[in-house]
Length: 109
Figure 1 (cartoon, rainbow, N blue to C red):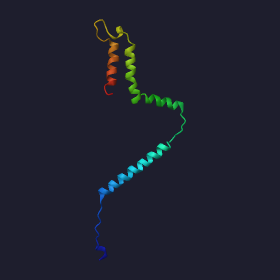
Figure 2: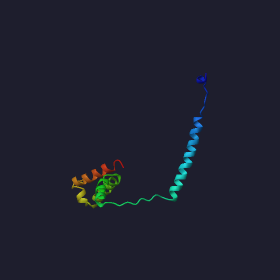
Figure 3: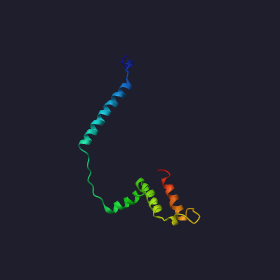
Figure 4: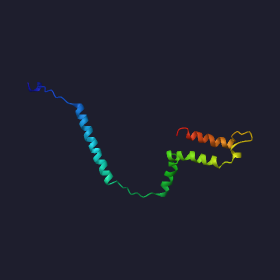
């Protein structure tokens, strides 16, 4: 007889979620305040050889890529008018290379 007893239990899931969000936001504010009071400082030694290898790899990252249009612009600005244009007023071969590379680099920026 005791094996057949059934007790209905109800859950208010929505209010539970709202309470959890409120408590979570309060906890995050406390963590943020604690981090602002005492920021974490990490001390590290850097091996120059490994840093150079990282630097070469980093040159292909977003910072390295965003530096390349500036480099193409410097090359363009350093070219004389005669280097940029031929006698007919068309872009020279070298100017085409610089201009096309600049357009390719800035297409997705």
